[in-house]
Image: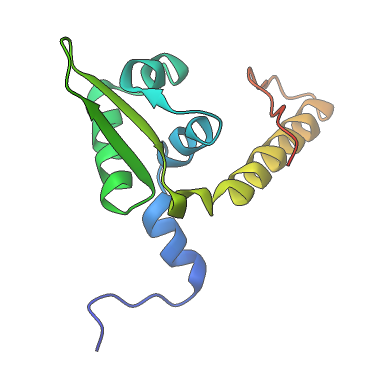
Length: 122
C-alpha cells in the first residue's frame, strides 16, 4: 500500500498548494521573479516566519525555484519552476472566480473589496 493515498485528484493538488498563503504567493510569482522582501510587501498580512516556511515547502515540492546570489547583503530570488508554471492557468482562473465572487457579494450589499485585480490576459 502506498505511503499516501488520495481519494480524488484535488486532494493531491491541495496537499501541495493548499493553505492560506501558498496560492497567494504563487499568484504573485506567476507574473515575475521576486525577492523575499518584495513578497513581504506584496502580502503584508503574512509573517516573515510563515512566508519563509511556505517558500521552503513550495521549493521542496518543486513548484518554485530559489536562486541565491553570492553578494553582500545576500540576495535571494524566487520564481515559478517549469513544473510550477503548469499551475498558471489554474491560478488565473482562481483569481477570476474570486473577482466574480466579490462582485456578486457587493451586488448583495456586502462591504467587501479586492485591492489588486487580475489584469493579465490568459
